[in-house]
Structures are given as C-alpha cells and as structure tokens.
Length: 251
Image 1 (cartoon, rainbow, N blue to C red):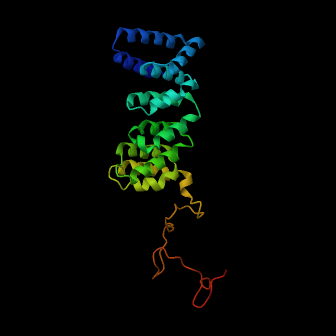
Image 2 (tube, rainbow, N blue to C red):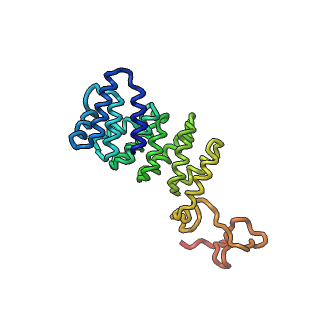
Image 3 (cartoon, one colour):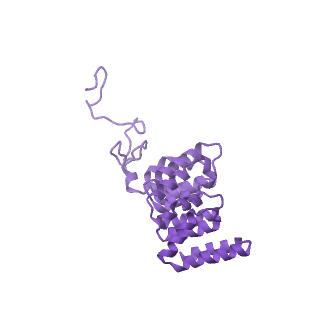
C-alpha cells in the first residue's frame, strides 16, 4: 500500500496549481499520517462535504478503503468508472482491499454497461482479482456482447478473454471458442481455452454423463479400427437390438 499511496500523493501534488491547494493538501496528508479514529472521521467527512476537490475525495477514499472502511465504497466505485485511467487503477486497488460484498456487484454492473464500454477495463480486471460469483458471468456476458457488436472494442474484449483464462472456468469455453476465430483475439483465446478445458468440470458433460464437452464426439480408444463400411461416428448396434425393418421401437 505504501508504494501505491506514494504514487497517488506524487500525482496529486503535481496537479496542484495554487498555494491554497498546496496548503489544503498538506493538511489532508497530516490527517492520513495521524491514523487515529478522530483523523479517520475527518477523512470520512471529506467524502461527503460540499465543494471538495476531486483529488481530496480520491485521497480520502483510497486511504479509508485500503483500511477497510466501507464509507469509502461509493466514492471508489465512482472513481472505478472515471474517464481518467490512473484514477480507475487507484480505485480498483482500494476496492480490492476494502472487502465490501457490494464491490463485485458494482464492478459487474460497470463492466456489462454497454454505455460505458470504453471505461470497462478496470472493472473487468477487478472482477478477475476478486474471483467473486459475479466475475465469470459478467465477463462472459460482456465478451458475448462485444463479439456480436459492430464496434468490438478489442482492448476490452481482450481483457475479458484474458480474465476468463485467468479464472479458468469451463463455462467460458463456448464464448472463448468463438473469440478464437477473431485474429485480434486468437492467441489470447487459445491460451484461455487451454486453461478452461483443463478444469476438472470441463471433462464431464452434465447433460450426457460422459467425459466429452457438449457437442463433441467421443474419441475412439487407442488401436480401435472401425468395421469395414462403417461410417465415421456411426454407432454399431448389437444384433437384434435395432428397430429393424418393420419393427417398432419399444416405448
């Protein structure tokens, strides 16, 4: 956290434009260093006080969120979907430490919002880091939408593919298979598919009770040779078990 906060402080300090702002920021940093309950209460008031500059809210929210204070949640979610990527990164790091059960739902809502696709990168990455129940469904839904859209938003689609690969969930196999047909995603999708298909749950089709993926043909045993004249994939029946001419199947 210390390195992350130092980077935040340096960025804010470089953005200050007046002696008044510099003095206000020095006072804010004094509260951060105080680390007492009274100082934390003052930081929480910065989040809701009117006419506070954005850098003050961001600093207070980051410090409180990293300390597990859930009063920072709303401000951090706002920053997570902000137009400035560096603020999104800071918010995502604090939200990952916050431990608020609302975080994954909020990140999923931001990641799947078609109006805010340009800003979905860091919500997607946060979902991957959280590994919450909402993570895989949100990434699948976002990737499916992007693959079928006119504007594919390749960086966002690639983040979904890479995130699904990191999560290694077999539910993503169908959409990753589609993604692999796009040259912009082929390499990332192939790597993600390898991880998803290596998951134990990917080896059994719950609808068929077999070890094959849905729609996949069973592989013949080693050394197996089809009977002369047999069609590939045809199922041979034992004598007397097939319907046969004029025989009605049992009901």
